[in-house]
Length: 100
Image 1 (cartoon, rainbow, N blue to C red):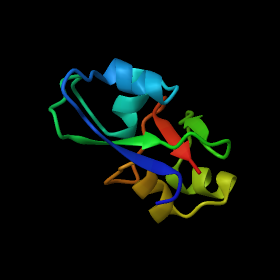
Image 2: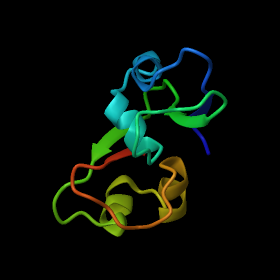
Image 3: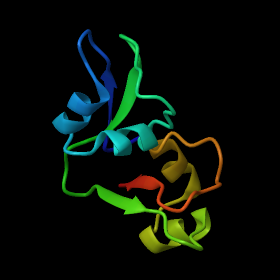
């Protein structure tokens, strides 16, 4: 998994301050990690985008499919699913995908 970093939650961390370190919103951090709550435990591993110029933040648009997004960015489905910690090819309009 190129261009992805793992962040281990430390005492005092919040999604907001972790997201700020990586120049994303806490909502984006939640989406990347498929979190449904802002509560995080010490020691939890979070996927965070590497700080590099090749990272694209893509928000799923109406009628997007995993195949259409993969074709658009010339990336394979397995890679995009791993990069975004996804277990399914199902997408939701407005969902954030990190493309590298």
